[in-house]
Each structure stands twice: as structure tokens, then as C-alpha cells.
Amino acid sequence: MNTVLLLLGVMAVMPIEISVTPMRGDAFAGKLVGITTQQVTIQTAGGTRTLKTNELLILKLPAEMTAPLPLSENVVTVVTLTDGSVLHALKYTVTAARAQVSLLDGTEITIPTRAIDHVRLKPQTPATVEQWREILQGPRKSDAVVIRNTASVNDGPEEAIEVALDAPEVVLGDIDDSTIGFEFDESPVKMPRSRVHGVIYYHRRVTSSRDPICRVTDATGSRWHVSALSLKEDGLHGVCVAGFRFTIPIEQVTALDYSIGNIDYLSDLPRESVVWRPRRVAGTPPSAHRWYSPKFDRGLFGVLKLDDETYEKGLALHSHGEVSFRLTKRYRSLLARVGVDDGFRYEADLELKIYGDNEVIFSRRITGRDEPFDLELDMQGIRRLKIVVGYGKDNSERGDNLNLCNARLTK
Image 1 (tube, rainbow, N blue to C red):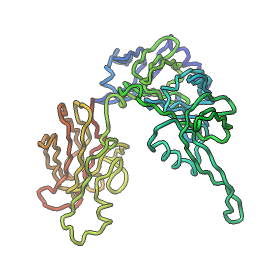
Image 2: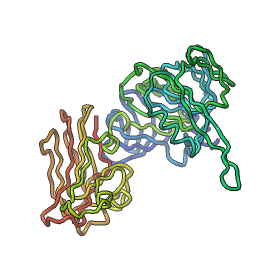
Image 3: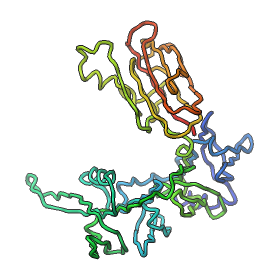
Image 4: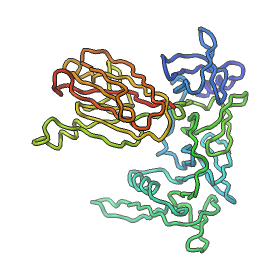
């Protein structure tokens, strides 16, 4: 790994090799020679290619050049910003509403607490994961300090420690290496850090609701949501959507994910309705609804798969299934790889209809004999999207399992 970092450190002389996945077309490899907020320049065997950021999905260093990223659950201190950035840290202190954060690679940065949503100060365990998630999703009217309450429980021959998290509303103050300072019922309190699982900051208004242009992942597993980028000799310079500037040595960058700024996957959007209608309501067991209701990021009966290729993102619908979305953003296109699930290629006969604002914008009969195809529809001006799968000419639902893989809306 040290040899790899040494080689990458001469990036100013020799550009680094990367793989590029564009929004449309095949992935390709090349050498990264330039990055701005508007575009990326790559030197390929066939010449220099410059792509606008809205033409990109992701840039990655080859797998053999990067070490496995640490999981947030295993990191002691995790700082989450108001823009969704997640920073893996060794140390977190606060003085006069300015946080001093030591990242896992030793970099020291200063962040105003107005840009911080919450900070977890202890690694997660099975006993705390769900409690922490519920506290973060709960309503807020003030800052909160999340306290760890422990108790010994006799569980058979061995004694176990049970952890319960409590999140009283406070006004957070300074934080040092040993104590968490806050006001509770207008009284100052200094609590030992050993008793605190994390802190949550209340903000009347979020710093910015603007979408990031890119998510930068570094070698420590930190993920930065950025509104501006530039590549210079000393590294990648960025501005977080939350408003502060940072620099990452280029050898510490593992991926630049432009999908976060360019697309929204349908499976990640709130659903207005999800419906499956059986041919005969009477006598249909509840288990049938579990089997045949539309699925998200998986197939109807397992992995999402088309033509022997598996996909992590997408939708799967059975005959007489439909999904609708109320679109709160402006989109340009709907893109997807569409076809019958591999396990049912010789039985299916179905009809796919897609509606935009209650008008049919796509209709096609699809059978198991058809090859998967790429779908691209104009979505400009559309505020409601509905996808419906119905019976084909055989008037039967046998094998009618359709996958819309990597179904996504471009901005």
C-alpha cells in the first residue's frame, strides 16, 4: 500500500489511472488530467476526452489501487454534516461553536457547528444501531445529548450489559477531550464523554437545500458532498454544500460519484402508491401479495437480474402491478434497462405502460423471447410518474415478471 501511495504522490508529473462510467455508453479507462466544477478531462488511448459533470455517473481508482474502506459502524467518531457528508474521525472537540475534527488520515479541519447535523462518539453495536436511528429520525425542537444508560442483566450463566440510549433536549456548548458541555433547564452541565453516545445539533434552517454536484469518497471512508471541485498540484480542492472548504490529497481519493448530483434512482424516491391487483380477489392468500407486489432493489424472487447480469438498483413488477411517484424536482429523462427476469424468459407475455401526468408516454408488449432493451423517455415538465405492468396477448400472468434495472431520473 505504501508503494501505491508513493506512486500516486507523483500525480502532478504522472496523472493517475481511473475508470470512468458515463451517464450513457460504455465505461472506459484513462488518466485523470483535470477536474473543474463543470467538467472532467481524461487522457485515453484514443485521445483526450472532456465530459461535462452531468454526463458522468462515477469515476473510480482501480480496485487494486485502493484499500477496503472502513465501515461507519466500526469507526469510533462519525461526524455527519447538514448536507449529508459523513466524515470518519479520530477526535472531535468544540470551542465557541467551532468544531476541531481530526480525520482518520490525521488531517485537521475546523467546521462551524452550524454545518453539523450530528456526531456519533461511540462505535455502534447491535444493541445501539436501531436506538440511534430512531433518535435521529425523531422530531427536534432543540439540541440533544444522547446518553448511554447501562445495566447488568443476568442472561443464563453469564452476565450481560444492556445499553439504553436517552436523548434529553439541551443547548450544546463546548466539548473537550473528557467532557460534553451543555445547558439543561438553564443550568450548565459537564458530562463525562464516556457516558455520551453522541450529540445532535438543532438548526432552524438548513444551510442549503442545493443538491451536490458530486460525492467524493476518500481512503478513510469519509464521503464529502460538494458544490465545487478543482484539481491542483497539492490535491483535490472542494467546497461542501454545507459551506466550508477542504483539500484531499489526490492519493487519498477513491471515487467521485456524480450520480448524486445528476440522477435520482426510482427505488430511492418516496412512492405515492405501490399496488398489485390479483386476477381474483376472493381466495387470494396474503402470501401472494408479498410475492407479487412490486419490489425495489431486488427481483420478485431474488436478485435483480437481466441477461445474466445482476443489478443493485431497480424495480421489479408482476402483471397488474403498478408504482407511482409524485416528482418534486425537475427531471430531463427516465433511463432504465428493461426486460423479463432471467428465470421466466420463456413464459412471459406482458404489457408495460408508463404514464406521465396521467398520459401514456410509453407502451410496449414484451415477451420472454425479447432481448432486454434500453429505455429513455423525455420527462421534462412531468410531475407525476406511473409505471404499470399488465397482461400481454396471452391474457395470463404466468411468468410476467418484468425488471426495470438501474431505473433512474436524470436532472
